[in-house]
Image 1 (tube, helix red, strand yellow):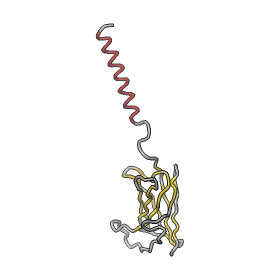
Image 2 (cartoon, one colour):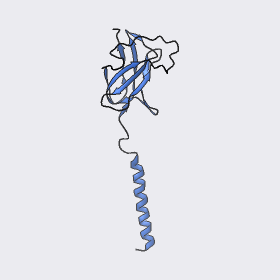
Image 3 (cartoon, rainbow, N blue to C red):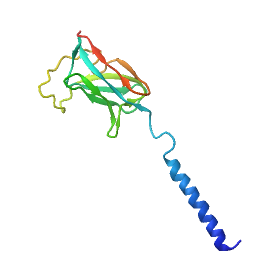
Image 4 (cartoon, helix red, strand yellow):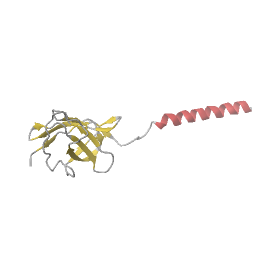
Length: 138
């Protein structure tokens, strides 16, 4: 074989291997499994607006957060580019975030089973999750 033919074959194989490597870069698991989570927060059957809803993975990892509107509806956000929460068990905490505008929404006392350090556990499964958080006054 001539030198030019060998060089062409080598370049062809190199180009093919390079293309396969680039293509496979997107293959595989690029992070934890995340699923959409939404729901309504109520206290004694009444919608609770202006509250932060935080899901913290029991097994560790990034927490997800959402904020309720005046109808108590929330959607969790995992990152700037991804809605939802990691699949698995989560400790759920509700709190008022002073950085969020609540524009006239009446604040209620959050029961201890949903406040900081609560032991309320909810499971996020693959696919869409509707997780309503129904609080009862203490």
